[in-house]
Image (cartoon, rainbow, N blue to C red; front, side, top):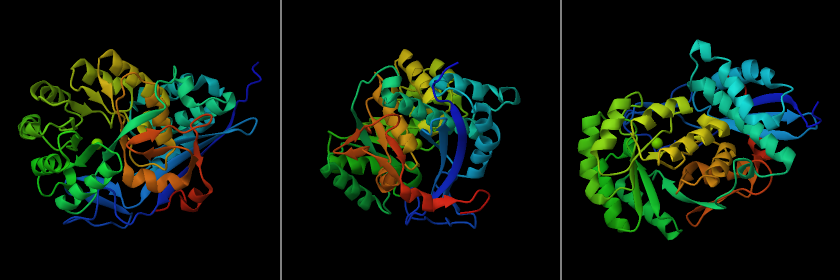
Length: 395
Ligand code: MG
């Protein structure tokens, strides 16, 4: 029998951190925060919490060493913690954390016959998977990136994601502020482009000049032909990529857009496993894949990213709401890849939430700097625990 420390306990926590301005900017016409703390963005008909929501996973080994994971609990976080507390956690008690990828596969298998191929079930596995990898790294005294095939980068170029100001003029000004701080890549959100999606690309290009990279997130708003028409209008302003034009179920439409436009297409923040990515890869729908660590976990992220490399597709990871635990995991995974030119930088969340993690991880001068130390190199700080939300409660 192994004398290596085994998994002794698995715990989950819902974190809810108040924000002054909701994600994607101030409330627009017809938008309000409901009694459960959510708002629906009219621009993309999607629901968001008014606070920053997350689910943390704590896995403790026999010797007391703790691994941390994090996943999405943005909406209905109790669904995630129920799956972790009731299903996943008890199954992996006594497992060896060095078997991280095997554990992830075993957890995925548990619900396959019932058709749980994605959604909350796979998010929950992702949170557990990240914690198992963190524990593995800590018990070996090695940073996570060293366990993922080797380290290619110590820092990763960052692109500024979102310009959350009320008017186009203010958004251009915000981009200028980031430019002065060393950032040269910017993505805006079509969902809040009230002055027009093409106008915003043109205004940013004219203001920032030819040397910056400009991107737009189209938030799955268009049919294939509408997207092709729109992207043709954006093309003179030389986007570095356009993101998510069509609804995610529309595999054929995504492939049609990818084949018709003369701009790189980026897809994939909502896909969780190789099984979801594979059919899109086979259709050659995109040239940039955007895996989200909070949905995939480390094990699936690496398999997805290596598969993308086999298809000559670049990986520019998505990074959204979290206190910084899954962000740290995403940087480690990205740093191991041969096909990762940039990583998304959600500045409105990342910098503010750094106080909730103990880490050397930073995003400065246009670069993400990988956290130092074993495992993820990022742990929840003492400050986060005042924002734990009781399970079963609202807001
Ligand atoms: Mg997006």
